[in-house]
Image (tube, rainbow, N blue to C red; front, side):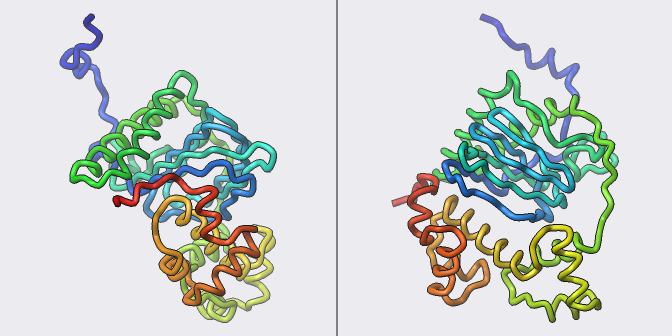
Length: 290
């Protein structure tokens, strides 16, 4: 049965990229009724997100999306976002982060989704193929052979093309996006959370009183700057425990804690599980290569 004439179709094809994306990160979060990730931003990565089950509240910049199974989100690089899973119906969420792409026919070639488009849509008839691609990405990302990275980049490119085609009909976003001082603080902490950040350092960096910094940050994000640093560190540790085979000592150090015992106690207090138990309960079944 003849299904597709590549040469004929190419005559009418419109290229989406002048430089194809590569996958920089893949994650799958599921079954954790207390899963949340505080406000954060990715400086260089764009996230293609698919919700395969459950419910969650997902905020991008100043807009909240109550997502369910079959929903899609695109988080452009530089966008502030957060997620909180529904306690009774925990979210199952796939994320493929891409980078190094250039969009064709765009005045902002490093921005995936035009800024006047809402970052939310449904997968509709594409749901099955999107799930298949994410599962294939999970499989090949765990293979230890010289071709796995190339396969993952090709799959991520296919996924990006599908998302782009779906979001061509996305609703126009009329909300005005105004930068704020609180955002500047969040961007700074997001880039430096693994360092020893104090209110004194923030005061010296921004040349504004610590009281004003604390007030504006809490007014916008509902949390003090220092508590945000802790939440950001713990959330990053949760992600590493779920999606990598890094040791507890390595994870503790990467998120800013030289004392692993202190980190473990803080993790237990904030999350309700010791770090390694959390990994056993919620982690992906990663191939260690042994």
